[in-house]
Amino acid sequence: MSMKHAVMAGAVMLAASAVALAEPAGGTISGKVTYEGTPAKMKPIDMSKEPSCAKMYTTPPVAETVVTGTGNSLADVVVYISAGAPDDAAPSTAAVFTQKGCRYIPHVLAFQVNQELKIVNEDQTSHNIHPLPKLNREWNKSQPPGTPAISEKYDKAEFIPVKCNVHPWMHGNFAVMKNSHYTITGDGGAFTLANLPPGKYTVTAWQESYGDQSQEVTIGGSETKSVNFVFKAKPY
Amino acid sequence: MGKLLGVVLVIIALVSAYPILKNQYPLPEDISTHGHLIDEQLHDTMVEAGISFIGAQLVLAYFVWSFTGRKPGSPLKNFPGGAKVLVIFAFVIVGLEVLALGAFGQKAWASVYFTPAKADSLQIQAQAEQFAFYFRYAGPDGKFGQIHPEKIDEGNQNYFGLDPENDVAARDDIVSGELVVPENREIHLMLHGKDVGHSFYVRELRIQQDFVPGLDLSVHFTATKPGKYEIVCTQLCGLGHYNMKAYLNVMSQADYDNWFKQQSAQ
Image (cartoon, rainbow over the protein chains, first blue to last red):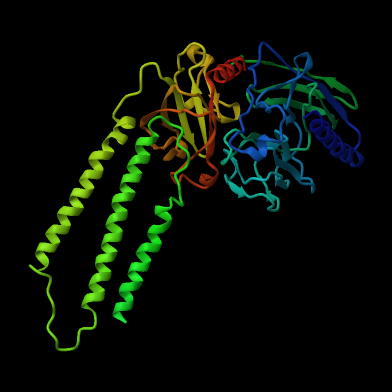
């Protein structure tokens, strides 16, 4: 997971720096997402019904609805500018969502409105991907092993839970964003939103079980503002 | 030419009977205490149906052989006493046959469906959903937590809709994707359908019972041989039906106790 997150964070930063080349360098918002209290213990996933997936793990993987790290940090939290920044055009690169070992990788995938979403099945079994949007059009598609990637798009911003109609334990999330100022926290819970032009912003952190929190931040110039989020963990 | 058809009929009857008599397609191993009753019933049915089949084919062949080659204009030969006697005779024979099978088979059916599970049987709840089975054990406290459909959250592994936050009995419930049972102990399986019709079928247990949404049905059995056996859904339930299966894992009591302890600790 940590590698995946690192790669993803890297990709987001690369994308951000590409934008930076075109625009004048702006301010930065950085901070950390943590929890207080006792989070629920994530249970191991029983994949015995799908031996081709079960054999890919030496110890059964656990559910990922709350992913914690050292120092009470929370991973897989989407941190984004929910107000104050203009909508951005979608980048030409596709966001890739992979089904591997009967799990979704990454567990939370953020991409922009109208950006291409590519869904890949790397397993030796059929999957049936079924995102459950409330604002966008709902679809579900079967994807047998070895078939080409499914290409889709969403035209409205929202958080979409994703499930597999064949494997009940499979669960992931799409975060469809209005602008390019977003990131997903990795193992340490840290985040950075760079290249923000001067202005007043609302920064929101979203965690799939704990909901969202927002804070107002004003960026004057090329300064770095620190913002931290603390979620209340629930034991059950 | 007509006589040849009689010979062909005899050959077909004997060739079809041969693999059955040789037991070419034996039943799968029986690992349950009640399974032998079902097997005996199947065997009796096969013997009775087999004798009737061969008898009917031979009679047919005899008639074809004897009454073929009628010259045009020659008188029709009638069965002695006319067709009415024959029809009544056949009706009584077949009726008695079916009644006898029902009467003898009644004990095999009743031992599973009309006899309740023993009070000390191990209670396990089986839930069928598109497209998996989940099994719930009461946990160390011996009590099942309540089910709340609105709490079902599969991404969080809450397949049954338990409410551990408010329901203490639900906190230690064990939920498994595999049906793990100790050998030689009666299992009372309570079947709960979550979405559409499914079926619980383990051929080695000689049990096949549908899940009906809205009805909590139950079956009971005692498995006698440790090992892993396939549980398959035998009611077409949708796109992933072909992939809807789980495993029955029969263990010694000691192994089962270990497994139970391990699951409770998670």
